[in-house]
Length: 158
Image 1: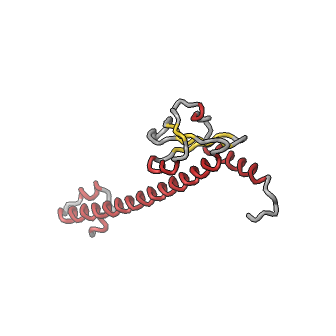
Image 2 (image 1 turned 90 degrees about the horizontal axis):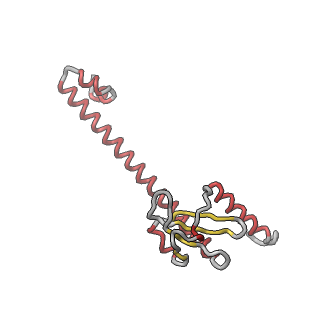
Image 3 (image 1 turned 30 degrees about the vertical axis):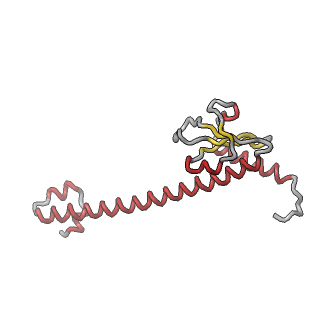
């Protein structure tokens, strides 16, 4: 039996082996395999964190754009009134005219994109979550796009 075989054995089987050198070799091999697995998990975690950060960054840009485009008709607001984690992230409330509200948490690092959006008191009626979920928000966005584009000429270049 070699150290590689020992690395696949249970800890109880390794400890039951009467050869102390094989025991040490097996434990060292197991430690190296665990270190490699941990390194792999750390790489995966960093990639996932980078992907998540990228998604938040993109969403912040798009949300800031929508807030700016609708500012004249339905000004968006920011409020520090999150009922979920992370509580230190403000919530952006956007009202899609004749459709309904959409809202998103904004990472504090991305607040510079929202300098054009008013920060209101947490209890402001303009910053009251309507208790809808993301599926409803996505439906409202599609409905708003449909209403907005319905008036466009079918001959316009898109």
